[in-house]
Image 1 (cartoon, rainbow, N blue to C red):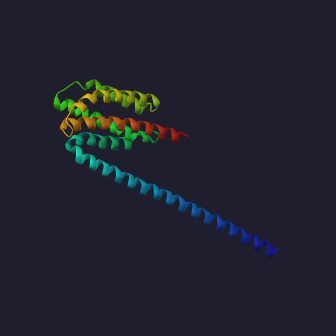
Image 2: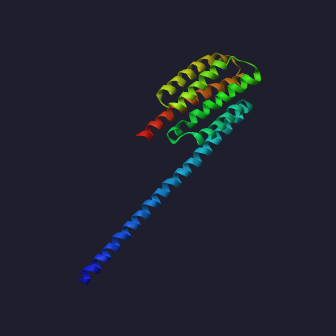
Image 3: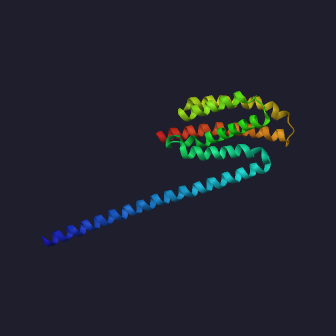
Length: 194
C-alpha cells in the first residue's frame, strides 16, 4: 500500500512538473510571438519613415502640410477609435490629413472652389467612422476616382519637376493611397470579425 501511494505521488509530481514545463514553454512561445510582433512593428515604422523621408526630399515643402495633418489625424484616431475600427486608422489619417491640406489651402489662398470637395470628403469620413463597411469605402473610392480624373489634365499639362507638377502628384498619390488603405483596412476588419 505504501509503495502504491509513493508511486502515485511520484506520478502526480511528474505529471505536475510536465504540465508546468509545458505551460512555461507555451508562455515562452507567446513571448516570442510578442517579441516578433514588436520587431515587425519597429521595422514597419522604420520603413515608413524612410519612405516619408524620400518623399519629403523630392516634394520638399509641398508635403509638409498634408503629412502634418496625417500625423495629427493618425495620433488622434489611434487613441480614440475603438478596437474594431483600428484597421481603418491609416485610411482615415491619410484622408483627414488631405482634408486638412485642402482646408488650409482654402483659408490661406482665399479660394472656395475646393469647398464641395472638402464637404464630400468630410462627409465620407464621418460615414466611414460611424458605419465602417463597404458602403463608405465605395463612396469615398468613387469620390477619389472622380477627383483623380479631374486632376489628370492639370498634372499632364504641368512641367515635370515644377511646383504645380509636384502639388498635383501629391494630390494624386494621396487619393490613390487613400483608396488602397481603405480596402486594406476593410479586409483587415473583416478578417478580425472571423
